[in-house]
Length: 349
Image 1 (cartoon, rainbow, N blue to C red):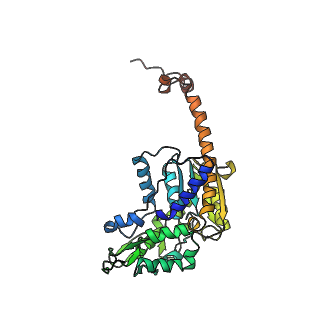
Image 2 (image 1 turned 60 degrees about the horizontal axis):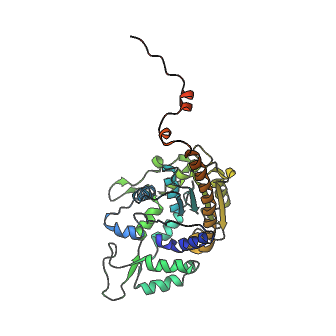
Image 3 (image 1 turned 90 degrees about the vertical axis):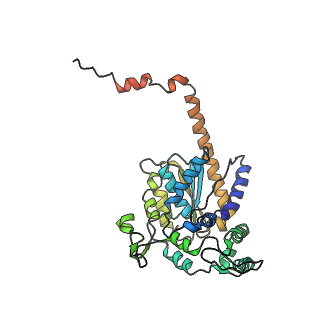
């Protein structure tokens, strides 16, 4: 959920300020079925979300609020996949992308997450007891304290909810997850089995995926392999922030992303042209939760270099364009006519 990334934004802001770089604004939104968005949409949610919906939603947000250039996208995990998708929809939208351990791969990596989340605890007698439980967990102890504080504040919601309609009448109500575990697992995986309740399949990997990317599990996620196969088309500069021990970022997977990103038709030119780079941090998948300062430093360095490149390119273009009189900018010029050739002779009737 979006609030967990606020410490990262704080640190990026401070590091860029020390480089005399200014951030105009930071925009972030929860996907429709998670966090505060999920709470607002609780009565209309289903069980088959698409990762691609969020990229389209972000494009609407950018247009609605008339967000000016330059824009740098920062996305973690599924968010990295969604920003890559948005960039493929609108290649000139982003000046750069910071993809933090993105789930962009051919392998089906969701089974482990789905298994754990299906049976995770999602109800506590009070927020205080939930906080004590999280604070004593080695998993959450690895998080930056600021992130854990945000999780306790925003990762939980008071009862009653649609899934848990009963609530005690105490001043310290029971709490559940702000993103229900059902919506969490629906986000992780799409099923390919027939739903006994309706007799309908939810998804068909043979329609959604390349045959080489399909395994025998009745759970799949089509977007990661689809985006992986389109990495050569990415136009913005890309910084990959990889977790050294992340299941998504083992050495061969990192090398493949660096080798292919931006190297195809419409792409940036890739790593060989200095447009794609990586930073590997000593942690797992949850990089922005555990290594906030290190993530912010790598991000700020990338943003600083990309802003220098953007300003140089913009200045050069504007200087050249300003030499053309206003009336000539919208007219067919002599060079055009020279290359297109003489007009065809008209037939006489």
